[in-house]
Image (cartoon, rainbow, N blue to C red):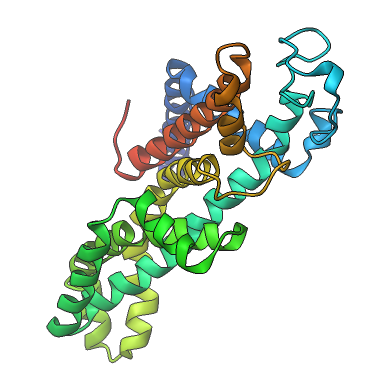
Amino acid sequence: MAPINSTTAVLPASGLIQAQARFASRRQLALRPGLLLAALFVVFLLLAALQPGWLVSADPLEASARQAFQAPSSLHWLGTDENGRDILARLVYAVRPSLLLGLSATAVGLLLGTVLGLAAGLGPRLLDGAVMRLVDVLLAFPDLLLALVIITFFGQGAVNTIIAVGVASVPRYARLVRAQTLVVRNAGYVEAATTLGLARRQVIWRHVLPNAIKPILILATIGIGSTIVAGAALSFLGFGAPPPAPEWGGMLAMGRNYLANAWWLVAWPALAITLTVVSITAIGRELLRRNEGKRL
């Protein structure tokens, strides 16, 4: 009787396990059509931000008094505003500044929060207390109010808006990074690296920072939706780009004056903001679920 080759016996088993994992992943995706729709909508947003001309042919700044307040029709799918500008074109061209603000402000908040969180988690007790008291003071202010205070001091503009919204999100990331740092700094692999003689800077860059920041990056994905809402709120209050630049918040601010006669001026920008935030949040929560090893 020929001996059984252990290698040939293991390979089919490993291939079967991989096939089962792929099938389970596809089955979960099929059972969650909402997640698939969210992913498709985010892809649409990225396409609108990179190449808006591929989606609409109308000029978002072209005004025509004769076409003002036209209801949705075959000529203007989402209607026109008070100046006769196509709402669909303005919605599509407003995606780029909204995503740019959301990503940039999240990056600013994450960067500053990581620095403060690492300083508090790895520094002496006096530094930890000082940083946490500063974070507590910032947490006492609502994000939007804190952003308004910063814009009031430094003035309006796209860069100042990004900085203001980003700084308003710093306290959340600082507390999360500090909590993760306190857990990681006492881990066995960090103590082993220190025992082997690695410099403190190398231990932080190779072991503490990557392991402390990984779950925070996933939570930051969810936070992008919050920064987009904050940017739209600032634009609604008149702190965004000046007219006639297309912005979702600015479109809401102008449309509220004609809500009784032209509901579409408010409905479509509000729907765009809602779908964007829901889609990004759904993807972020799915990434968080996978990172925690949870199943459907």
